[in-house]
Image (cartoon, rainbow, N blue to C red; front, top):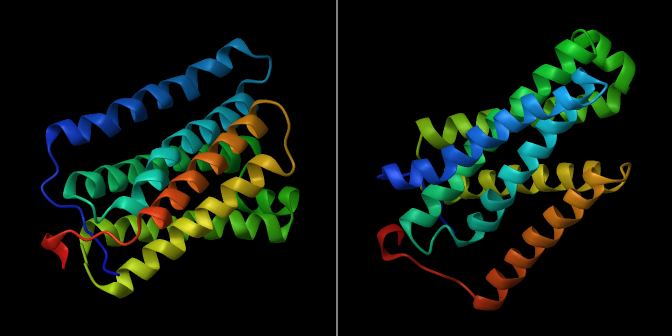
Length: 196
């Protein structure tokens, strides 16, 4: 198993990921204007937008060795999902909780630590993905570990303590990614000779 770094990204591939990112970012900032709780609404909408961007990222990732365009799209969606997640973190940590110490106080040390671990781990993964562009098996294992952690984080936080739209989105998220992994296992190993 080797990592497939971004390579030769076309304008069409970039657009296919950037346009949904832009639309979701605008939605996440404007939709809460129609609610009674603007700041809480933006925190919720940004995590919903992040989840929506994560769905194609995590669906495409198991098939990244099928072709360079598939790998590029998986990486672009993953990166733009992280940018939306940073928007959520800003709104949650600095607007709702008024800073990092208050975040730990109000969320509790365990939950806050897991949240900040995801921010740092995902951020490092994105940096390494675009700067190092490694195709080693070690890079692939790190990417799988990061994506697995992100999947579990979102699956648990959207389905277990939530109800309503968040839970529905969480169920769609879990079902879509699980189905993609099942298809990948059913299809069997794929190989792109470019990365052999």
